[in-house]
Amino acid sequence: SRNIRLAVIPGDGIGVEVVTEALKVLEAVGTKVETTTYDLGAKRYHKTGETLPDAVLDELRGYDAILLGAIGDPSVPPGILERDLLLKLRFELDHYVNLRPVKLFPGVETPLGKARPEDIDMIVVREGTESLYAGAGGVLRRGTPHEVATQESLNTAFGVERVVRYAFDKALSRPRKKLTLVHKTNVLTYAGDLWARTFDRVSLEYPDVTTDYCHVDAASMFFVTQPERFDVIVTDNLFGDIITDIGAAVAGGIGLAASGNVNPDRTAPSMFEPVHGSAPDIAGQGKADPTATILSVAMLLDHLGLTAEAAKVEQAVADDLVERLTGWAGRTTHEIGDDITARVTG
Ligand code: IPM
Ligand code: MN
Image 1 (cartoon, rainbow, N blue to C red):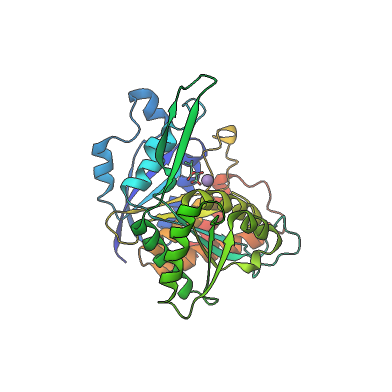
Image 2: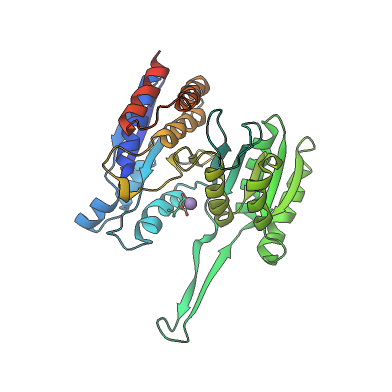
């Protein structure tokens, strides 16, 4: 098979550990990969003050894909690495689709007692470049009793339409062919109106897709009470951030939640990362579960058209998860990585 040129950003904390295991699986699945590692993250920031130098960003544009571990460390003031590294990558590489499957694998425990794998099988298409993440707004009289802070949600017709179209295509490709718009149109009357009108207009081109609408607060409840309502969801950046953490929780925890920051137009590489963060409290102890990153590698393979390899990795994870039922608790990061690697090799 063809040679993948992959940029790897292990990042901070457990990011380094989980990426090591995911790369082992990637190599074992039989794809030829050529990896280049970038030391972006807290260490580089402390050493040089740099988060994402322009020269590095330009270099990253040349890869087929990017694998990212996790970014963030308590030694760096909150917001800096998030905004100037992670979000900058998503914005600059035009990752307008943040793809987040919420899928309960057989054998995985869910806090929703009776839910079965067929009840929790959705995919959240979270917009990735706009909304409250755009950084619009400002502050007046900061630090005084009269401080005024505004944070505006930026939504463009172009930005909303392209992600909505992607979601309709995604829904059409799945057996249930159902797409739910999640927003808060009853309060966010300007942004919600743009989303709802765009959704309705595009839906006319997809007569085979069943559509639905759900306010984000109700959707949060239904994630827990009736997850089977959902197949594909399309939503804005912040709502998507919040509901996918709920999704991760109901589908077995943050250790299993994978994601792709996708540029569907392929004008720049897409970037795959676990939904979890750098977990500094358990970093370096071999306690992190590399499964979310390994599943992110499956998404990466799928994005690059290596569907058989992607399916193989996902199946290896599924088999490993079933085995966990029978008492494999306490494996280290390394051991889980080795076990899943052995399954894709064999
Ligand atoms: C995520 C994270 C990020 C986000 C943070 C770290 C900026 O929570 O990937 O979900 O809000 O998108
Ligand atoms: Mn998040």
